[in-house]
Image 1 (cartoon, rainbow, N blue to C red):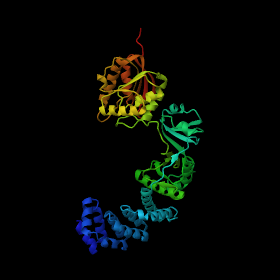
Image 2: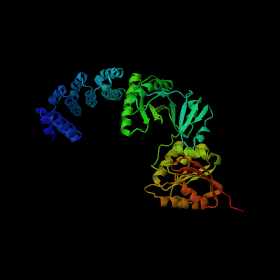
Image 3: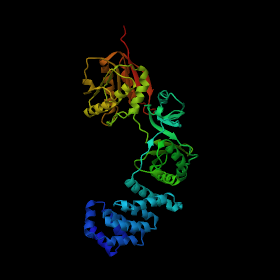
Image 4: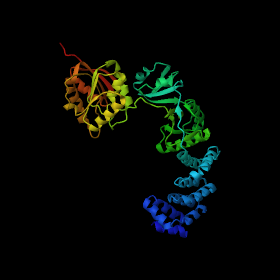
Length: 497
């Protein structure tokens, strides 16, 4: 078929249709080699089509030439790109050029990029210009890279929003000793506190900077992008060493369907680039900034800046995990909630330890004397050992089913993330596990020991505890209103005398 398509193109028969078919066939590397063999290094027929009157013929001919990976084609493609007057074809010329060694033309590409950034184009041309601009940026960044910026705002006191567990916001608020706090639906607004003092708090999931950009209508992406450019750039410059440009991405959280949301983001990102004159560059990877936009009920947008330049060392030990691993911020929250019940130098057991996160967070909050972790999953135990070493902790890990575990000494505390219902572990099995666990765990505990249990199946836990007369739920901390997932603090009471 490659020969038939190519010979038809050379003979001028149904050129557009055969070019499209030929281009589709070239997805297969074997067919690319076959075409190169047929052409014998002479691509004159295809090069001639770069001057065809049909723009779709020019576009497909350029893309096919790019697949040939012949450096001799680069001057031809580049000259055709410079002469191309049809806007939607220009980005495809660049995609073809990008497959070759275009470094000799890098300065010209950079000049074209800067020209596009400053161009005031009619609405009907903006979509295709944005496509060309994106490809140009990727090509320039690939060769010249982008200078990464160093965050320097540790002593600054801008307004912040901490994204935290919405059911347990107070647990995070209690750890902030400076500034003023306002509770929000899913977070905490912090004013007049140094960023460097907030960063070590272990129970927030994200740190955001609100942007004052005026009224941002959710149905006007270009207007939103233009309005965000200056406040986003000013905030980025104030908190970093070095000059622009900054690489960014746009994240929109709204009721909009996914397809429309993608178009909205592209249009807003292009407007941001244009309004910032290239000081903000949209990038699909290696971005330093995220413009987070949240749609309000009234159809306007709240705007926030998230910085990926801030080193987050809180959970640096967590290099290893498995699918069922608890998120470290949730483990830290469980420990923070239960902290009044914990004691220093305790002997601690995690009977379902996974990769060790609960034990590590327990020890970081309050040093333990001895810690044991038990898990039936051997891979998790090996990963727990690596995480624990990175955390600078000492834990005795045992690869064994908890129900076969034996130990001569008793424990002051149990801290664990209980197994939950999954496709491989049905409800009946997990309910039984809870019953068996609370029937057995007492033999490992000191009198008046404490259990801190993260339970995704809270009804199983309450049922199991009711069957054990010496166990009493001292406190329950709801973490998820929908599922009921909670952290339970359970006391083992002394026997009646």
